Amino acid sequence: MKHKMKQYHLITENLSSRIAESYRVLRTNLQFSSLDKPLRTLVLTSTAPAEGKSTTAANLSIAFAQTGSKVLLIDADLRRPSQHKVFQISNQVGLTNLLVQNAPSELALREVGVPNLRVVTSGPIPPNPSEVLGSLRMRELLATLAQSFDYIIMDTPPVLAVADSTILASLVDGVVLVVAAAEVSVDKVKKAKAQLDGVRAHLLGVVLNGFEHEASEDYYYYYAARTGSKR
Image (cartoon, rainbow, N blue to C red; front, side):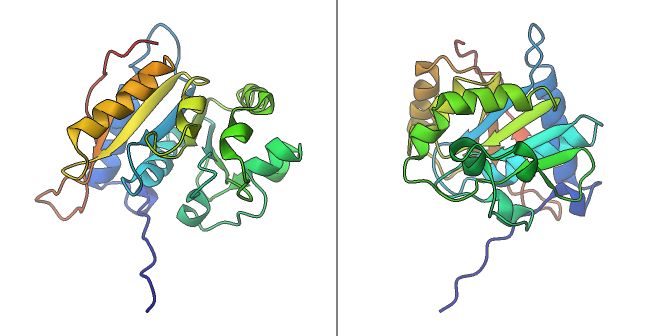
């Protein structure tokens, strides 16, 4: 029995859709969420798998790129990477090659047909993702890439599953938590927030994913609120 391939819907398919507008609202809210310090590096995570974080990360990256800003989307989910599937590109060379093999970043920066957007896929999955992401080399790579891009958005594993997301959350300007509406318990969301608070992550807010809408769109993404978590 063949498994149905997961579909990833990008807002480039219909720029006038309700979903596309929702991502533009999300982008604007994020831009104004940190007035004291410009938001340039961002982690997207979720409480559990299959909540839509990878699609959200991809579409949010596109929304930022549509403003003319130079945007880099990094697939930092080194356990179940998705961005190479989202954009239908090769995953032969990616983040792990840059971190483990010190490969030149130019080899991993991929064009995906969206102006101003580049994507770094995960690359080969390593046996020790947490150690790789928590390395000094990761910090150095982020600092180097930040010199060439206005925004860096990282797609990371679910926060309750492994430590990877909390490791990266401590390195960036802000974190967005993607939550599947009516599928994830409030307790799990609170636990995820507590773990992010534990590393003093700047939790900007929550994206509720999976609202059914009366219109023809299947999903509606909404920036819920700033959480007021401590940095």
